[in-house]
Image (cartoon, rainbow, N blue to C red; front, side, top):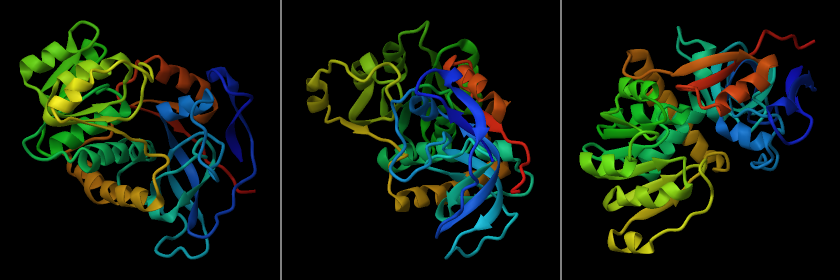
Length: 328
């Protein structure tokens, strides 16, 4: 099969298309004929050598896929070859075939395309985990979502709106801010031209912050939280270290939570996949939410897809498309 291979850790030009053996499904697994695969910041970090795959996972990049079931492993029931699904994977998504845990497979409704479906698992499962479960977001609360025009940010804005929360967000251009407002943000702040902490305090402090930025923004973020507020840190695009006034944590009784999805246990991932299947996909079908795909690239243009994501031009998800492949 054709799959993305990497010559060595480094820049996007270390990625190319090569030949790899077609994987065989083990117990509890499905083999998927991949039609589309989402591109994520975690893929970039793995490509650079900063985010190795967990033990037993494929070394091929790619954490979310959509396509048709091609083969079924031992012990799997309830699925048939040819069925259309999307799924989160621990690796291996940038290929013509990928192995999927049956417990993470999400059936696609009629009319939902593979590109749209491939944009859902990582972003929406991340949003659900960190907003609804760790953040305990509920009706009437206020939430600040940084990087609102990213794939996760776009999902988080919509999930927070569907949860009955008031959504504030940040983005790096006026165009991205308008995109965030179209998803349901009541206030979108251009962080390049506006003092974010000042704007949030003027609008009203928040109960929860979803932060993929980290670095020096952590201190100002804490100043934006209400008493007993929570901050969930899911990445550190602005750096992994900073100075922090611990007095804010103590006096305001704040909670700071570090969170990743990839190394979660299978039961947690299966629960999150079920939430997307039972709640998010029906909301998209009903028109109450939408998949946000900014741009697609053929699998052979994976390096260009990574460069585009790293340029921060995207509003929503970047997705790779995979041509039909033969098992011969």
